[in-house]
Length: 336
Ligand SMILES: [Zn+2]
Image (cartoon, rainbow, N blue to C red; front, side):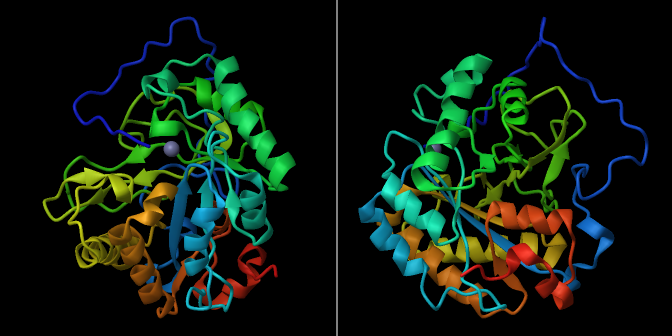
C-alpha cells in the first residue's frame, strides 16, 4: 500500500536530536563505499558499454496462491543474457507473509528485504515513530526473515514510503542494513531529466534527490539509498510505484507506459537501473501483471539488459563493470 501526497512536503525541525553532520574531505567520497547522488554513470563508463539493469520489486507478504502466479516469471523465458534466471526483490511484512513461501523464494536466489512487521495505518504513523518503535518493526522483520526463511536480509523499504526524518536511517545504520529503498526522486511533472543513480548517505541528502516526505538531515556513511525514480504517464504526471500510476486498464496501455519510460528515460539516456515497483496483491490484476510479463519477455531478447535484485544492482554500482567483462562480477553469476 502506498499513498503519495503531491501537495505538501513536511519541514522537519530536528530540535534536540543528535546528528552527525557530514564534514567530507574533498575527493574522499569514492566507490565502492561512497557515491554522491547524481545522474553520472558510475566509473565514468559510456552508456552504450554498460548493462541496462531492470529492478522488479514486490511489496508485502507472499503466500502460496501468489507463488503460483510468481512461478510464471521464474521460467525459461525470463533469463538474463548470461543465461542466469532474472532475479527479483521481495519486501514482505509479517502480517500477511507465509514463511515457507518466502523461504522457497530465498532458496531460489530471490532477495528478501524488510518492509516492517505490521505495515500499520495511518501512513503518518511511520513519519512519527520513535527509534525504538521503528527498530521493533524493521529489525523485527529482518530477524524473522533471517530465522524463518533462511534469508540474508540487507535492505529495507519503509511502508507507504513515509520517511521519518533521521530515525529510520539511524536504525538502519545501527542494525546492519546495507541499503534502503524508500526515497522518491524526480520532478512531479515530466521534465525530461535523467534519473538518479543509487547513492550513499555520507552527506545530508538534498530535496532534489529526496523529493517526498521527511528527509533525513544527518550523515550515514556507507549506507546506500536505492531511490525510486518517478515514472511518468502520457500526461506527464508522476508516480513512483507502477500500480499507483494513473494508467489505462488494459495490458497494451500499461505496456506502452513501461516501454516509453524504459527506452526514453533509461535505456537511451544514462542507463540508471529501471525500477518496476509493484505490490504482490496486483499479481491478480492482469493489466499490470500481463504487461510486466510482456515487458520482461521483450527485454529478455536484448543482450545488454539484466533483470537483477537491488543488492545485485548495488554491487554493480560499487564495482562498475563494462558489459564485455560482466562475467567477472561474481554476484551476477548463476548460483544454482
Ligand atoms: Zn507496502
